[in-house]
Length: 129
Picture 1 (cartoon, helix red, strand yellow):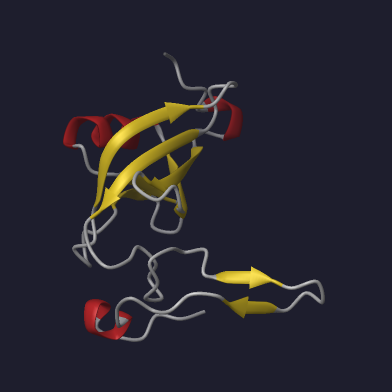
Picture 2: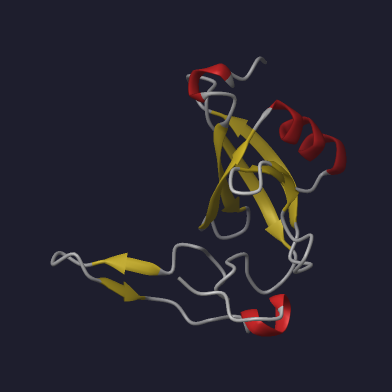
């Protein structure tokens, strides 16, 4: 199947889902090269927009994402990557999922999860936003 990388300037969103729980862990972007590398290695490789290069999830933390299944949406312009996460979390802020905040009706955000690891121990300094 041909993925439509051109629709969004060479990148497609890649939704990362825990194969066991169904939880959405993160969202990244892939180009054709990162998809090929993901399929070749069985570990998720993104195209980092901020670094402007391929980036294997877990290359610095060790928290790699092991691919269990790749799905493509009906328009062939988005991917669902079902994974087994190797490590306590995928979020650079120390949470299991990057979606650890709930937006409230007043526009504020409430943290709804506990940290699963200390980011300063993994990355060498506090990583927060």
